[in-house]
Length: 161
Image 1 (cartoon, helix red, strand yellow):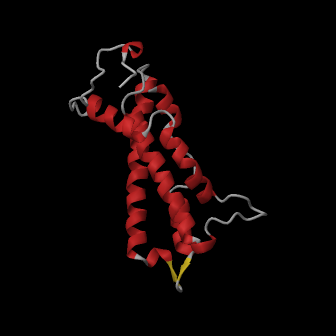
Image 2 (spheres, rainbow, N blue to C red; image 1 turned 90 degrees about the vertical axis):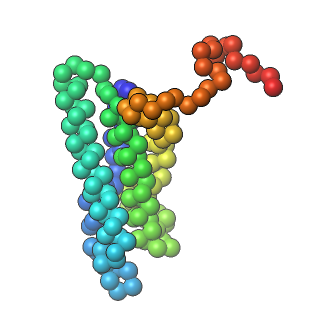
């Protein structure tokens, strides 16, 4: 959980940058924010950003009491890494065919950095699939996935078919 806590707060482009881009970028003569689909995505990211903020407050409260990081670190990691990748993708798409071009003077944009870096964050500290299993089993109390090797030491798992 400590590793998930350290990795879980994905830094990069966020709702503020996406909102600014949507107000300034031109989509056939209109600002992107006038597009219903763009506004829907912005609303989703706003909700995710605020949910993450209050989930992080829970983590900080637990840590200040000397408790170990809880399952909220897993939730934060999944949501923030996926949100980062989605916002990065939005920024690149807003640039149309030039979205992936790197400006020689400015280098990689924050949207490009988010889109390119987010897949690594989705793996670090446990993949999305592993974290979903952790949340399902430890938070929601769902039964574990059936495993043929349960109770066996790694060295005792048969390797030949």
